[in-house]
Length: 124
Image (cartoon, rainbow, N blue to C red; front, side, top):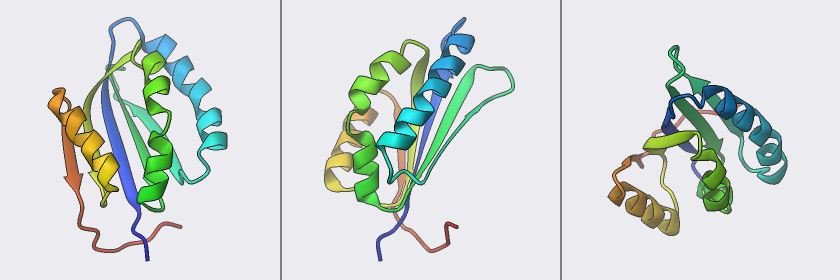
């Protein structure tokens, strides 16, 4: 059985950009929902101060994470007008190409943490 993957991206919201970012994020949800059918969940949260944004994505397997990442560079260009990534956490074992991409991201100064050992659980 393939193992689920949880991908968490932590970001700093650029000063003065919170309202624009909120609209941008809301506008991005439906295209991802429609275009990435193997993304089981995408949940976005901001902190009380409106200075940090975290998005949590859940995938049924590593291939679905790869599908989500396809086109991410292009999508991120607009998003990075509003936020700066600070950390990425992956729970589960990504495919080798995605793992290499994460190592490159870590080399750019963004904290990357991978917890590959899935012990079990369930997604309803």
